[in-house]
Amino acid sequence: NAGVTQTPKFQVLKTGQSMTLQCAQDMNHNSMYWYRQDPGMGLRLIYYSASEGTTDKGEVPNGYNVSRLNKREFSLRLESAAPSQTSVYFCASSEAPSLSSKETQYFGPGTRLLVL
Amino acid sequence: GESVGLHLPTLSVQEGDNSIINCAYSNSASDYFIWYKQESGKGPQFIIDIRSNMDKRQGQRVTVLLNKTVKHLSLQIAATQPGDSAVYFCAENYNNAGNMLTFGGGTRLMVKP
Image 1 (tube, each protein chain N blue to C red):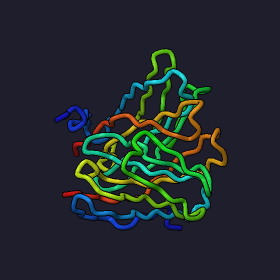
Image 2: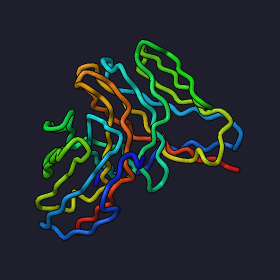
Image 3: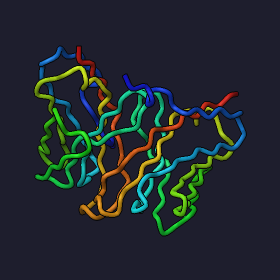
Image 4: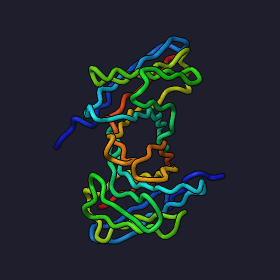
């Protein structure tokens, strides 16, 4: 049981390039999330998916798109990377069967992204 | 540029002592709180949670205290060990925000052997 896995671990991009960050969970969780973490700060929610087929914006969605491919996988895409998107990106999942329920979120190891 | 987030509050304790990490949360409507531990280069790891109908919850070597009157949360670690060295984050969930969490800025715990 690997929990939440993310690929790649590291990536360097040039301004304007695009890339997709992959996330998968094997806990049969309903909800999945993408966060970014800037140096010395807490996590900020980019997008989340309460269930397969649904996605919603979080606190900082600009410059990103997401796809909930199936129950296991939730990807984050940067269409045109900017230096301000240099950050560490974390994916998380939770059982949360509905929008009103509250369940612990479990995090992946992160993807470190540098945009030059 | 803004540097307020670059310098985490740091708590330095001696191995074996008890540690208390504090968090002031922002929304009086929050009703679910989680403490996470983050080691260098890793993702946040769940430690303990508490719902607003409780004021104390205990786990293995950890206790979370919730004071809703002053919107304050604390994490107590008993007999702190070198392996407890990490950054600790509190997170809150508003009662009308589904399962969306809002994270605090974090506190770095350093354990001296």
